[in-house]
Image (cartoon, rainbow, N blue to C red; front, side):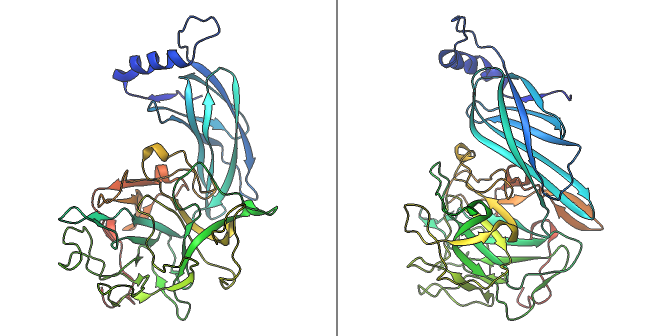
Length: 402
């Protein structure tokens, strides 16, 4: 077994221990905090995917900023020692190349108590193939104006061809999922196959009337409003100019919105009375996918006890997913199925002018390959300034206005 890596702030250890003493006394009643032991077992539900030789295991106590990293063989179980008492998120992950594909493996348990030794933690682990198209960078939190106001029309979503082959984004959909913001009160969906779907609050679709090809290393920008947001009539303090975006969610609702050169997307599902692609500045959960059937807005569903209209999206059709939360204290409030995103990412607040972007894994023949382990906690990092086509991504040749 590899040595456990314990990451914590040593200077805070005495404070953590004293606080833990008050909450978790040992059976002898001495009040001394002793390191705990936990046994982790894997429930492998991998379908046709091969099992990797081992999985990475990560235990995180966000409240105490305490972390343990280790591995477990796919045919065994793991005993983890030296755990301080508390509430943990446990994630299981792996990546393996086989049969011409890259397989990602992920599973997680959130908000699990480890307050006594010997408790078994069973984690379901599922597999998926890395998508050729990725959400590369997302700027969702908005920016401040010079007068201290809040500006939100500068949001964008960059989709990148991370593969070595040409991809076609014709008909690709982007959806904001229910619930809109991170919460412990998750909706309950009816039906025996309810867990085979995610549920979209709104869906926008790239037009299906022609091909939109992306070469390896190229990306497209979906802008809420494809304009130069640094103009004096908008927000000179804004960090982005989106006039070269390929697509926009155009709704002419105010006089400051212009129909710029970007291609207008199709509002495929929008039950809200206000048709505006303003995704929450607190961090939403997003998927991109190619629908196998035409989207019929009348075929909506509602969760148990709710009237909010949503659209069922088969998990099997999802190309990529990203869960965003409002701040680091919400990292364990999972909405997204683990098989799509085992973690979450955040800029840590609202109107900060920051974005989240994927980390670079490697460069192959001059083409940047980004991380895609289906765990946003690992794959993404915060950028102090949003940048479209970061790391040398190219615009597609059909974008003649770039």
